[in-house]
Image (cartoon, rainbow, N blue to C red):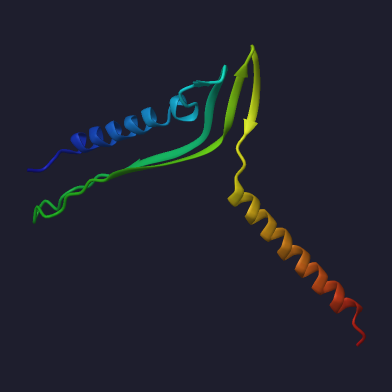
Length: 124
């Protein structure tokens, strides 16, 4: 059984609508919870995208059809809002991996600069 182009397009738009619903503020701001008189609201950085496809058949051989949709989603915690006694305080999450990569880049730059200084001062 083959699908018409309209049926395929409807499926693509249905999947894209699903992605839109997935990429909501509810994904960014988690459910608040209370702990020791303090309300904590987790916050994440959420990114995503969607795409779709379609296809047609060869009228002579009736062999060609096609369809495809897909989406990707990435979420990364960035911190929490802490609400206590009517005061709101932002507490950022520490990304240890990012700090380590930054340290490695800094070490590489220092090594290259030190090597260039040593080579420049070397007698010829």
